[in-house]
Image (tube, rainbow, N blue to C red; front, side):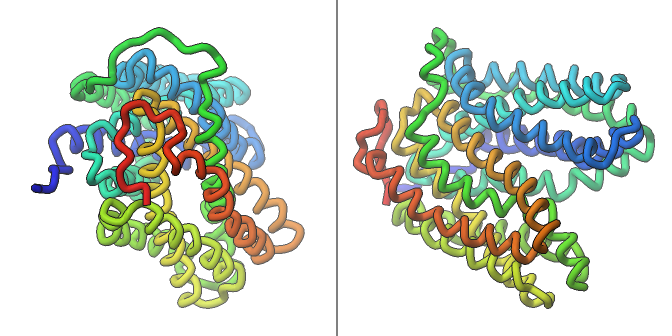
Length: 394
């Protein structure tokens, strides 16, 4: 039997859409703290925007995913992209800090709508037999965007804050038009809205706690690895991020297809096991070699855990509610990152960043036990699975 084609025109079209949306948002996020300082805000206020944005995205994600399932996922992409035009222009003209944070809440909420809707659509585009591989390649879109967007955003910001906001508005207009041209799927039709009790998939939410304990350390890495490198004299300060990105790309290209051949757990368990080791090495790293080793393991763990986890969950849940499924995963992951960023900072201030990453290592050891305990029913196929094909659940 021939292998179903993965890299189709519609796969490429949605990949480009995802890249463009991340490229837009990650031009904004590194620069807006500078805007808040210009408005007279403190450094704490400048840092609060990311926390507000992340938590708004996290806690809105399940509801936004559920709404997208019922109003149409492609329609949700179009609506969110159009509203992003409005948000971008508001950022450019609003001079009052509390209102900027309020816009951030609305922006973060609609950001989760794009993440959950696009992820759900992509699972319809990817052949079941190549689901892990397809989700791994799908995850390279934000990786590529984040690699270049901050530098572009800072460059445009030199021309002025309003110039950057207008550029982001123009980019959002392009993504809205692009989304309107995406092919519809059989499940992307409008349906009646669900009752409030169905906004969350609690079985999936419990399982995603295994990702949340990993994301705790991820939040610390994002915020404090550069500072840790400076404290320990490891140069360049960006070394960890560069190696992590390259490791993620490499492992997804080389190993993701094994999840389709042998089941996602073949990738998930080693990936989860690598992450505590990475944090433990990071906690004591004093040389470039140790930093590189930690980054490679972290790239291996994060590069494979998310597509493997999503393959397992998507295969064992209702295909008609994939927006809700993706929203539940985004909720756990973003919440873990937000809490981790704050907690690692507090612990690092009192006891040192080494101790903070040691705690992250210990906490991430819980990922496998949590996954095993919370997915027994899903693995037996007793979850609400509709007509989904339970293939390769390992």
